[in-house]
Image (tube, rainbow, N blue to C red):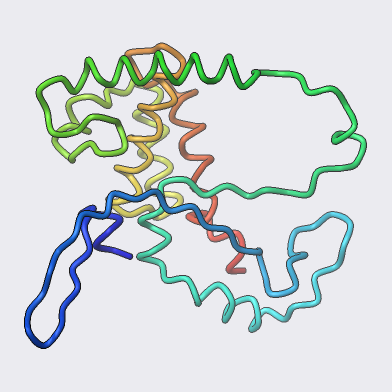
Length: 193
């Protein structure tokens, strides 16, 4: 998956030669926190041993996890919350925010190879992902405390840039950056212990 995720192409090699095909994809994946699925569940007991959990998590390589932009822990939703009337942003409101953010990105990248934040190159990240001082300090702390890779650093900035665009902000604030860092659940290694 490295080549399609990073280079947006797939190369198929056979004895007579190789062919490269375009493969601009969006990877969406899901996995349980452990083999039984109950690790961290407030109501059910996990029956997995530390060794079982370690073997389970080891099935997904660190480099692959590092290439996934957003990691989100999705807890069970209590029945009473399912029955309540939904509050917050509607689908239509979110659609409008996304359209405005996409217009902002189209203007930002006019004449450049990238058309959306997710495709920014490292030089574009340095150019377009300006952080306020508080966000700069927060990113440095996260890098050191979480032991993040350069790849994770760039992914956090791309996501933070998108969050700032959705918030109609030219500068990435600590609020935008904190949300982007929170989307790196697996970098916290919470399930490896």
